Image (cartoon, rainbow, N blue to C red):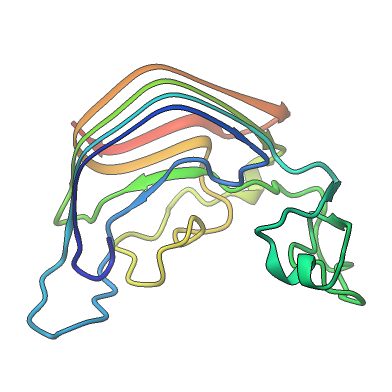
Length: 193
């Protein structure tokens, strides 16, 4: 919710995800693209349970039908650094040793927390591979941009879950493993009750 929407009472159960960049993403922002009198929205009473997410994409993977530009261009296999499968794109500038997968994040605002978020029986297998000098110790707060998993940065200080500004956070049986060694904590919680 970044444009004033009220999101309440959602439940997600028995989910299996493969090749998912950020399997959990809940964001309360203040982009406020709408009528001027609109107030910041809210997100409350969200339950995610029995989720298993394995990733990331392999070095080369079969193009998925939802990746329309690749599908349209009849790209059968694509490099994960060239997500759109565009021919002749130069990916040599990409640091292929950096963490490739985004961190799942659940973030409210500093003056308006998410309410009653429950995570139970969650298994995340993530790429990892972050060195201490690659990730920030401080993360931007109160995002006002487009709601994307990298709204708070491409590399966050947690490898699995970055959670901030949640009133009523319940976490039970959360397991995060990294494929490659990673210097970050697996889960970080800031301003969570």
